[in-house]
Image (cartoon, rainbow, N blue to C red; front, side):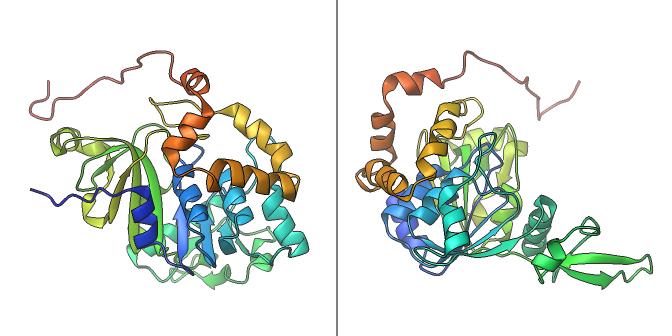
Length: 307
């Protein structure tokens, strides 16, 4: 019998995230653990380095919440809407404190996680030629290919202290299954020292064993499993709830003003004791409006025989 790794969000964040850590909350548009980000703010973690391919609303909220000293990223913004005011103010004005930034392309970030996961000294990339990124970021370095086929750029490995991944389901041992749009959750998890998975549903080990190809993160690298339904809102979870586009539109006005973003954090993070209270505050009607219209089965396979 596997040892249960199930924990509350409070305990997982308190036990596994320390001030000064590098923390990666991954998920590409889909499966972004806003619940974990809010708990990090609520617990007042400090001096974190936040890593993410596409810093969007959750990192804007966390940086407004004062948890970070540095951002490692590729693209950042409010997808399809506009900018991120809290991050921009920190970069442009240094208020209330400077924010150090380290910028790559999307593929550069994937390469960094891949190198970290494989314990490689660097990851080679050709796509930085004719860009200014190597000028802006001296960690992107031109090197000679050892196979005499010209020059490439190298990016260093990225090994977060903690990776946080949201998923549809996991068993108590941490075997974590995902379907729908994938980002670099697997690479970030294997690169990290500690892994927290946040799931919509806890299932029996028989369920994960019956469908092993959906297990992108094995329990052997997972420290904690947090069951947090609706924990990715306002991003989406395929099969559970849709992206809350209204939230992204509303955020544009909130993030433009420091007072308004701090008021939002007080109301939606600090004054609530967790995700269940957040969902209750959203209201049953709004939650229901984000549920899928109906089933969309993908078919099945028989692992015992093939015909």
